Length: 486
Image 1 (spheres, rainbow, N blue to C red):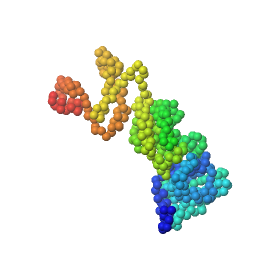
Image 2: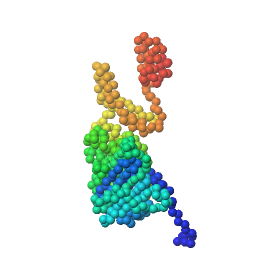
Image 3: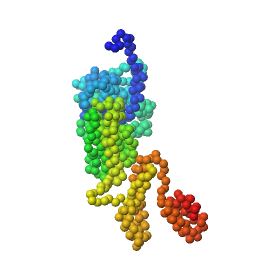
């Protein structure tokens, strides 16, 4: 042994300080509840019930499952911080890793964590009371459970109920029970939890291996990929190192969704722009939703792009999965492969967004005639009417017999077809460039200005008045030097 014969000193962390550190890991209420559900799924639960009891500052949240339950020894072990070595090999269905989830998730929301479990028809219960830990300065569990929940598992053969009380991170402890404003805020925060569960565990719910009841309502699954939409564009599956798979989807344009309600539902908790990006799963459990993993920015014209990444729990270290299971970082070995695949999905999503889902492809032996042409010079985009478009020829012919109708038709055509989405996409890609300058044929400008100047003079205006009027007409306001030289 390398340190044989040397003095050894045990450095036990100070209990109250360490627990306060656990509280600062950064869980939100929804990620904390999801972490408790992970434990229930790992325990084989098929049914989970989440309840909230409004009592002002003494409100309570419970999460109950019908899993395998724990003996007294197993429960004490589960209540111990760091109960599991993250380096140990685990069952592929095990959603934990650090042995901290139950404790850190609970401590982040409340000062009192009580767990009652039933196994082999025997009940076991223990409580972490953070105020008591601070008082005794030891890692001491208390053999106590709130009286009202002692019979909470009577209706199940086995299972566990997690009880959060003293919810100081959710509600001020002095909140009165009749405080309707705080009650409404409490309800809204819990509604976010329901949406998060619907998204995070949608594959379990869809497989019917799990049902989650929120209060008295069953939580429906929210699938970000809209697999039932006939205009969905799925990409082929790609294989990544470590038995990781990736598959992209481009959702339909709003005009091509089956129903308005389906389109609104597909928006998701973060909204259309917020939900674009990668969806990283581990063991069917969604870890990260709508994130480009540092590879790209979120932009409006890519909002229909969503990419599923499935990884086994053996890849936690390589993908840097954090304790909260809310962050992931692709390893360098596959980063370029992921980026190139995502560019293909994003390109298709941009085309669907740009053309409102109608992407015209040139057929063999035929030619497609766009009305507008895009040009880029010196990092500036311009958009010009395509003179080869048959519509322009028609307007020219009409102008020989009915010029007023031809001009009005041309103006309406331009007004109706200005490529606003294309302009938006191109400008947003180059948002750091300088403001573009107006570029026009100077000869045409000079002649038109001269003709209008003469017209203003013929109407009885003085030269100074005519010049002042020209400066008020766009685009001639950009050519004051030409006007002054008249």
